Length: 238
Image 1: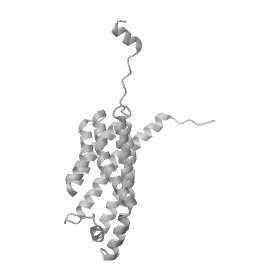
Image 2 (image 1 turned 90 degrees about the vertical axis):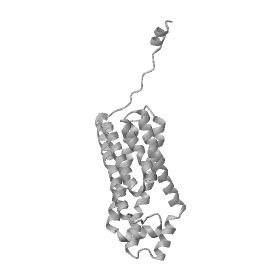
Image 3 (image 1 turned 180 degrees about the vertical axis):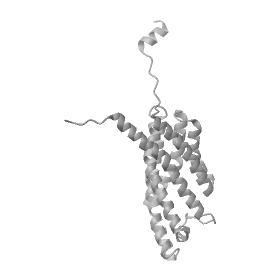
Image 4 (image 1 turned 30 degrees about the vertical axis):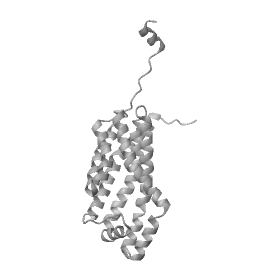
């Protein structure tokens, strides 16, 4: 005897998981961005090897927890985006597919980039921003593979997220203000600085929560059926 799986039960479990991810993942990035903004409040930056090691040495615990939040957020963002894409199966399908693929690819790369921050923290705690440590970190980050991974993340984070918001806006599967909230993150990230990143990620989290509500409800856009031949003929009088 073969057991059969109830497709409705698996669909419900999938929707619950995707909804939970849509609620939790964005707030992980809010926490991570807030942690970084606090460490950089005096004008320091991790955009250089020396700055990253200085921050790691000054805030080892905060750096580890911020990294942990970003790692969890990156993992959960994959089912979260799949949940958003499930609302785009009829309208804005191609745009939603491209946007979703970009975001997922970008944040898979981001997981790898952020995971290396644990090594940066360890180096910062054991020696700090010495000449040798700065040269070591520069060498690891100047490799073509690292640069390509970082560029993929930027493409998914900025372009992919904005396009996903546009797809949600066009499909009208969520309140339009929610789609605008998703589109607000790339703009805030580019022009808002560290504080803008925190505010922008919080706005995006609100928008994705609204997306999660629609996923939980199982909302799908139903395509309008094409008029039948009989109906068309009757309408034209033939």
